[in-house]
Amino acid sequence: MVKLGYARVSTNQQDLTTQLDKLKASGVKDHKDFLFTDKASGKNDKRQGLELMMTKARQGDHIVITKLDRLGRNTADMIRIIEDLHERGITVQFLDDGISTEGSMGKMVTTILAAVAQAERERILERTNEGRRAAMARGVKMGRKPSISQAVRERAVKMLSEGIPKAAVAKQLGFSRQKLYDILDELE
Image (cartoon, rainbow, N blue to C red):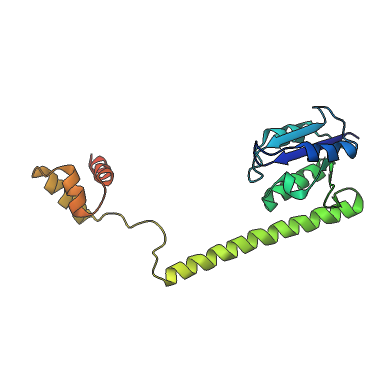
């Protein structure tokens, strides 16, 4: 078993020293093959240090992180990472939070975290749907804008044949010049 450590801060102005000291005190070797760091937002799981750690971690390894929020801010991504590691036989420990995925309790922790992530996804979907229904009740039209009728298309072509500039035709008919060009392309 190898102990790997991961530390992250959100910006280049922040310092990793406190996290790295805690990881070393927990038994992680002070070497680039064992300590992985990022200075990037936790919103994105495409972080160089995290990806390198995920690549280097092998079955039986133990990853140490100071806090849950250092792995990421997005619960669903954090759970996906933890479940991926768990499936590969790699345990994760969050020092400050007192959470570990090791042993039979670890499987329970992983299951609970997955349930929390699922509940969060469902709440987000619920709120989105509520917002959509409220907007529609206020008269907001949802979906694509209706396409331009054939009669309006014919009128645009007639106006152009009469020598009216394209910008003036588009303005008078209530759409953009680009839409007018799209209509002309469709007619060719």
